[in-house]
Amino acid sequence: MQNSELPDPFEKAREASGIGYLNDQNDPVKMLLRHKDVRKTAHDYKTFQSAAIPGRIVIPSEVNIRKTRQIPFELDPPIHGLYRALVEPWFKRPLQEDYTAELNQQITSLVDATLEKDSVEIINDFALVLQSRALTLLLNIPFEEAETWISWGTHVFRSEDSDLDADKANILYDYIDVQIEKAIRTPGEDLYSMLLASEVHGKKLTKEEVKGVMVLTFAGGRDTVINAITNAIAYLAEHQDSLERFRKEPEIIGKAVEEMIRYFSPLTQMGRIVTEDTQVCEHAMKADSRVSLCWASANRDSAVFENPNEIIIDRKVNPHVGFGFSHHNCLGATHARQIMRILLSTLAEKVASIEVFDFKENIEDLQDFQRKVGYDFLYAKLNPLTK
Image (cartoon, helix red, strand yellow):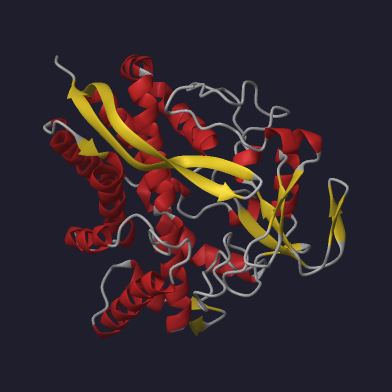
């Protein structure tokens, strides 16, 4: 098996029963593993809600470390649609020419600097830096602010000792509180100021609502984007032919991004709360119980994807759910896609090959399932392309 492979731990359970089980902090979860069940359940917001106690739909549950509701993530239609309509144009800005040009400059500069090094730790010194710098564009704030976020490390709510670290989470919450107060005193053209000036149902957003959007923005696209970048580097180190194809056929890079998101599935799963007794794939679901939409399993479903355990960089039909599905499709997907597209294009333009020297896999413990989501560290060298 190649180092860059991400095996599918859900295959047997998906084919046998379509379901898995997880005891999360004494709040059990039934994991839905089949593509059709995941999509159908994601679409049925009346039976499977997101607007539960803040933190309960996240796995592992964040109920014990936050009270702030992430908006619009932890809302359901029709109110979800009002908040989504408010913020969605902002999160579509990565499609704008000036945004793309600046993101391209950021990534090119980082790749150029990395090419001069004999070795770089990809997670902390490349992926985290890239993600943090790019986030300054999404928030429309000074580039230098990225250094603060880089100092937090790769995870917002997680430390080396704990999957849920309340003290670390409070660093983010306190930081956001300070930034909101700053935007109140001196409004600008940043996301904080835009939210504070916005209305829903004819009422200005409260500070708590603004905080809910900002917590989602910081937490939702951090380790997921870092995992996608790191896994892409590891893959290209073992598939130099893909870099060559990107050089010769740049038109396939968009397909390659979608395929990498499908295969890597940077976010394993997301929960919902059952509102009434029901069934999914002949399994009983009790009211007020939790189910998970296992994106990572759905993205390897052989009933949908031919050769699901291979990266086919020009895959023609790719209905993956790597960015979620239906009403709660990831708000940051446009930003993440642009990061990955520009990164692959830049690597193809400047990098001849990638050598990996050392690594440690990051294995997510889901009790009955052990899933590789990426790496704890990955040391590599990017070799320049000579023209």
